[in-house]
Length: 289
Picture 1: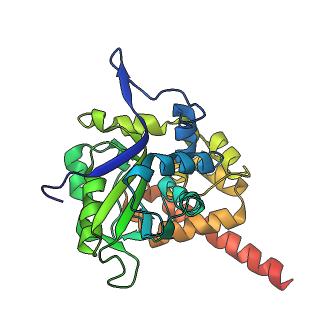
Picture 2: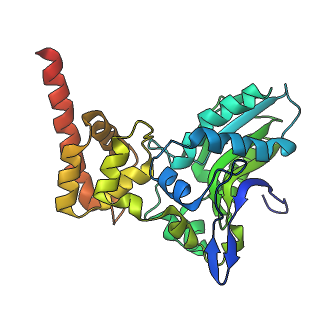
């Protein structure tokens, strides 16, 4: 994407007041508050529809004429989706309702980040993510000449934005519009602000269990990794309390995404896989009874 200026739209912007980075309060037109954003990142889907509608409204002026095919994707991932992937379906619904011929697709990422991406600095992010690791899961030539709307929850350093845009242009797209819930690029020199935005309250065992039991829960990679990062005792108790289908999903995701290679997750993976196998065995026994 050398020499290109990214087309970027956002629902809200991270601001600085008295030296502190602040995400303003939600409103009817702007539904993204700090607390809602943090809970969304851990799997709370109760505000997904409003987030998606606001995102589409913010991006609309930069999109092609209605009726023209518009391809829509989220940030790249392997098997377990990030929170941003939850924005895809409700955004497609909002785009189609407004008249766009919106077509969703998955951008696959071949690699796994060896730490919490939100805690990495600019150089570290550049080392773990590049365009050659990202691929549109579409038949060859599908994106040729097309506009792609790339949805994500936040932009800070722009490393993922640049890598994704380069990958989509390589795969044939003519133009990429990036849509974010939060534009935090003003804090690019302090990228760990992303970890602050994500919050920590949602990572506690009680909060994770409450989320998993919520009618609005949308499983994602942050939830999975939060479980794996727990100390052994709390993790064991939580896995025993989570719904069996969720534990099985988490086990398949950890295995497929190679999370045993991530130092701060590796200790929890064997226990998760044992719990997932036990859940699968229990389901099989119940079905054959």
